[in-house]
Amino acid sequence: MSAAVRRASRRSLVLAGALALAGCTTPFPVGPDYRGIPTDAAPPSRWQTGEALDTAVTRKAGASATEPPAPEVRVATAELLRGWWQQFDDPLLAGLVASAQGASSSLAQAGLRIAQARTELAGAEARALPSLDASLAATRSAATFAGPVFLRTLVQGQAQASWEVDLFGAIARTREGAVARLLAREAQWQDAQVALAAEVGNAYVNLRHCQRQLELTAADARSRTETARLTAAAGSAGLEADSTVALARASAADAASRLARQRTDCDVLVKSLAVLAAREEATLRAELAAATARLPQPQRFQVDSVPAQVLRQRPDLAALERSLAAASADIGKAEAARYPSLSLAGSIGPLRSTANGTTVSATTWSIGPALTLPVFDGGRRAASVDTARVAYAAAEIEYRERVRIAVREVEEALLRLADADEREQSARDAARNYRVAFESAAVRQAAGLGNLVELEDARRSAVRADSALAELQRDRLVAWISLYRAAGGGWEAPPAATRNAPGAPR
Image (cartoon, rainbow, N blue to C red; front, side, top):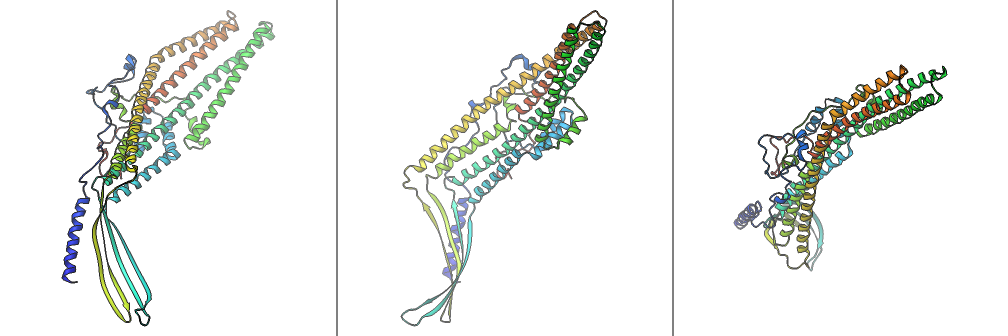
């Protein structure tokens, strides 16, 4: 290699190194830097549900009523989510939740969206790196220069490299948006897990409640059937009027009809739960039979009285907050497109030419910067910036609305839980006393001191009281599940949870 070629190569390497160093930073970033959610979008500093929450909420020591919200992506594993359901002391419920999550198409789709976001991030990161292409060509042609035709063979290899210098932050903003969108997709996947677990929990509780109602209805039907039998025997002996016998038979028939309807309702719920939890119906029925009509009993989990602390666990809010960050990055990306772009391109490769028995070999190379200046586009780039700003405003509005909805959902769940706790003891007392009254009426009627109408009235009151107690217990469990859903799934962030750190969402 000649001295001139060596000097040119050294100059090329120096220039390439300088531009590579410049490509590692963004000298003149444009667009807004995302600094978190707006301060005025914060939830209120306290719940607006009154003294009723004293029975449902325990405030943690040292909780600050003025702490600003900072929703973070909570990297909750399936084990952490399923762990919350262990509080219900019902292994079957926890198993159904796990089974449903393993077979859910919505979770599978959310996982695919995460994979798509990861590929988009990989593409954004690759844009900041130099690209290198290689080519090899061989041609054979005929040529003449005012003489006989001769054949020529040309063999050439070439390596081409290019590198875009991120002068105004287009590449950095693209990666920033890709990272935020990946974190948003992960939070959406977590939200889908929480929603599915709550749906399975509600279906299971409703089924257990239906089975409990079926037990009560069956016991009532047996009692009415026995009463009708005894009344018919007394009527045959002339001890009861025909109208009394007819009333007893009508009461027994009504109970049989309600029993058939209740059994059908339970069968429908079993089929629905089998589909939701991806279980064979026969297998599910066998599992349910082991503890028929047993309502799960949850332990309390602590909820702060500060919405900022509770709501930051909600993955739907975390997803919207990350979408807001991505929309902010899009503004900078669109703004950078209005400024000049600088790239470095170069190529090098050997060339070998053979003609008339003479072979010539050489090495060709080239290197140099290219500056592109936007001159006129009819306002297209400016419109792109305006579009990005509108998209950011829309994302901010959506976040504000979701925060208000989240506060309402938590408060409603807390109120319903407090209401169920307050009413449960009264419902128990009512059911016990109505049962005593029915038993007394049955004794009087058997001794001939009462009549069948009084007995049936007492029976209906006792059945209604037992049914009301069962419904209240079901409502209490549903309120717990609603609070689980409204509080973001009941899991806690791992100690080393990261957010928006380079390389974190791998």
